[in-house]
Image 1 (cartoon, helix red, strand yellow):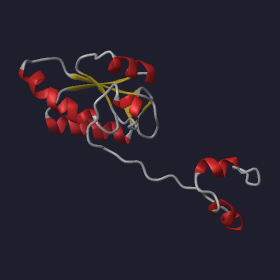
Image 2 (image 1 turned 90 degrees about the vertical axis):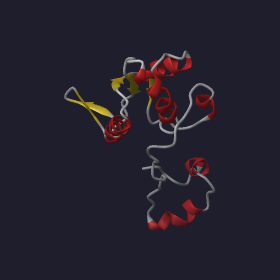
Image 3 (image 1 turned 180 degrees about the horizontal axis):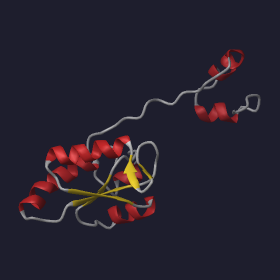
Length: 139
């Protein structure tokens, strides 16, 4: 999960490591360039960052690519030694999982606009209103 599951795992890992437990399973889904598979090799800058975090903390981790629904089902039913990385924090997810501090924050979204349409675009308070404007065309 993007924002809070790592702290939860760090708390569990000391006890898990002391008892010689299995590595923590860290599930990720395809979401290039964050994490993806290329020629059978798992890649992505957030996947690399997560591996570094677990290694630095001395937590043995096994990284697996799984579908989003399977990840959330496993979290919902409390599969032991299991977590996922890089999820937006929303109330429905917070009811199921515990989040850590963020390991990454996305840059703000932007809109590229031709100068002739700038005033019309700026007249909208939010993206929903902008996209609903029939005088503007999304390109």
